[in-house]
Length: 227
Image 1 (tube, rainbow, N blue to C red):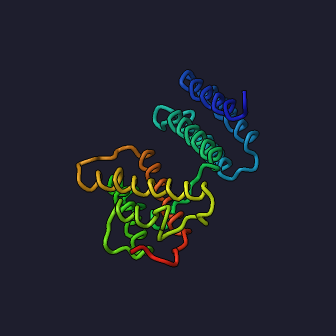
Image 2 (tube, rainbow, N blue to C red):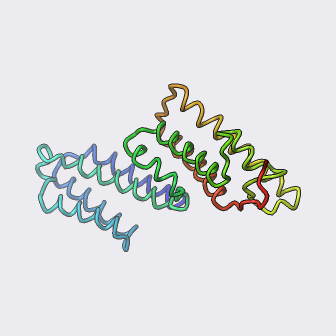
C-alpha cells in the first residue's frame, strides 16, 4: 500500500478508535499517539506541526479529563480531518491551475459568493469582448465573431504559423472551441434560467475559458484583415 493510502488508513483508525474510548487515561494515550504519528510522518512540515501544537494545547488544558464539557473528542477528530484535507491538498498541488487574470477578474468574487452561473457567464462574456477587441471585429458577435477571428483559411488571429496541415487543423479546431464556448456556454446562460450549483463543474468551465483566453492572447494578428 502506498504512503498516501497508509496515512489515510491511519487517520481513519484514529477516528474510529476515539469513538470507543471512555477513560481519561485512554484519551490521553490516544492523543499522545496521534502527536507521535504526525511528528514522525511530517517532522519538518510547519503546517502539520501546528496541528501538534493544537493537540498539545488540549493536553495542557486537560480537556481529555473533562471531555463531556470540552468537546474533547470532537476537537481531536476535527484536527484529524484538517490534517487529512491538508495532506490531500499537498498531494494534488501539481493539479493547481492559475486561471487567466481576466477570468479571475470577472469571476473570483462571484465564485467566492457562490454565484457560479454568473461567474461562468461573466467570464465567457469577457472572452467574447476580448477576442472582438483584439481582432477589431465590429460587424459580428459571439460565434460568428469567433468564426471570423479564428478562420483557418484567413484568420485575423493566428494561433500558429499555419504552414502544415496540422497547423490548420489546430486553428480550425480551436475556432470550433471558441464558437462552441459562445453557443454552448454563453448563450444558454444568458437566455435561459440555468443554475449551476456544482462548484467543481464551475471550476472546469472557468479552466476551459481560461485556456481560450491564453490562446487568444498568445495569438498573432495577421497583417491582412478580413473584408
